[in-house]
Image (cartoon, rainbow, N blue to C red):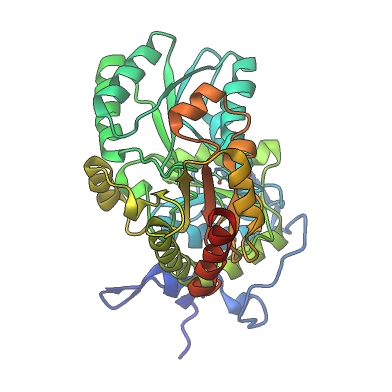
Length: 430
Ligand SMILES: *Cc1c(COP(=O)(O)O)cnc(C)c1O
């Protein structure tokens, strides 16, 4: 006999189901929607309560006056707060990230805004790894200081004593409320040692009597090759626009963590109007079904392309792909924190900008565009586009030179991508 609870099933006997399996079913009960195997798009702004008593209870839960029943975030009220399509993808993304719950937002920047506005107050200090995604740099360095929130940074996420020194120095400026890191970071794939960061936060907590909240932007490798919440980071943040959406046809973001940690983030999302709409949520539920096979295929092709670049016969290239970065400390952290390399990486040629542009112009399969993680392969010249707003001395420090070119490897056949590169390198440098 059919079991009406199959849609919440995460085990068969003692066997725990994998996230890949649950992407097709978890959190959606077909019997509540005419047996429709796939969730309908719930195009409605508001939801009817069965009784006024129920309406009162839903508002008490939403406003935090009453705890939600176990395993729930409260009833459906109004689509700015919640709706079925967003709840389905929040449940499913949590399975992949290994977090208790998730809050999905209308963009990655919306997710970052909800986190920062939920947890930072005037006179607080936020410490960041550097460089971060350009939009994150703008909100931290330009927007937050207008509200008297101070900023500090560290540049080497593999240097534990350096991170501790930076956090102690930041504490001189005020209460350190948050540490925001991106690992791996774009475009160099530099890493932050998350276990070392946790140890540093333990020390700061003892010294300052308050533990800063840790946030990691997990867009590049997560949730398939890296889960940060199970590694002790309080909040994982995603631009779902990239690998999770995966087809360059939508913009969305997410925040993952414990129910308690996300309560103020969820409240901020509802207050500011940062929720994702039902249609885009539905597109993400479709994308999640193929996420792991897409990321695995892209990663495998990316490794082959990186291998070709590292040994290409035309021009020596330094390949900033995690599998090819020759640094013992980096490799130890990479193997501990990640189960694979993602497919976004850069290579550095010792050439002027004009030659880098000529190479890009000679490519025909790779499209010249910003963004990453889509089904199509992209090529990007960060120093003149995504990172053109970063001060030149900082760009030099991070190695974002005019000869650095970033690739996002998609789902084309890897042999064709290598043929495209081979042709472009030959035409440019022969
Ligand atoms: C794209 C991106 C963001 C911002 O996300 P949007 O969905 O564009 O708002 C944040 N962090 C990283 C690493 C990104 O690649």
